[in-house]
Image (cartoon, rainbow, N blue to C red; front, side):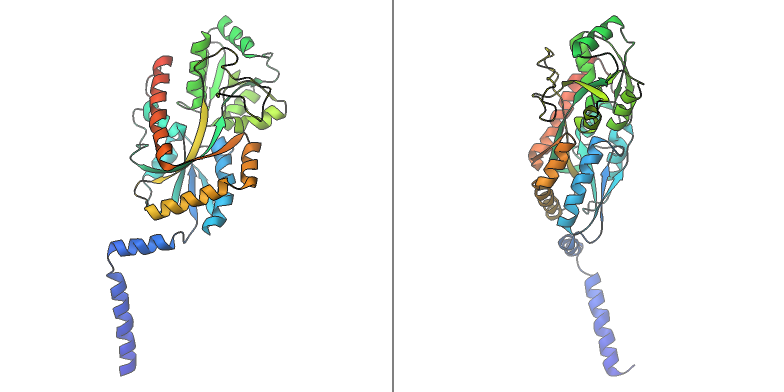
Length: 331
């Protein structure tokens, strides 16, 4: 090796050693500055075709170009969302694994003795993305035309009518238990894996009624296959203006709204979290995105990190109160 080659070799080796010797903090800053450098995985802890899945796919398509990398949806349904939440809670806090966080993530902290994660400590909740109403539905040919019809049948046959939910602790479970308590009626709970299975169970007449997320039930209502009896929110839904709220029908204190957002593992750097937030805010402001969400019964309703995180605490308290009222114990 000649002198010039030796100098070149030594210079290259020294540079490599210097780079390797950079403090961990400096390397982390470099990784943060260049994020994202590869596709991002967005875990949806529910089955394909559910409300959260539909929402996530709409937003992933809009957010990917804003970040310069594809956002890939990965469905990890089961255990009321616990399986997916556990996976993300243990993922590296590098911005490449997200979770579609929703009300059940908070509710499960009370519904399960050991959900396998802590909804507040294991995640950084970046922002709420959307909300969707909950709707009380029956099969269009069930011979039930109103809430009073359903209540009369349930009272006449205590425990004989079955209702479907999207899983233990979901709004479609606790909401019905509250409704039954208010009506002075009884029915048998049949849990399924998400709102899409819930809707299919009613369509297949495996159960009599249920309260799915409107975004999932809406196409079947429009097709005339399901009959909407009531909206469980505080006001009528613009997509179904003729359907009254439970409060309008005399049922007070049963107001339910499904909400979802974007969260990442705790410890995710501030700069990455901020880039994610900005990208989603821009996506939610796009008229095409808002229209697509509305077509599926959802509403773009962004909310910042502080208020969104507070929502988890409030949901836990609400779940605990509903469980007490319905006489339910943690599993």
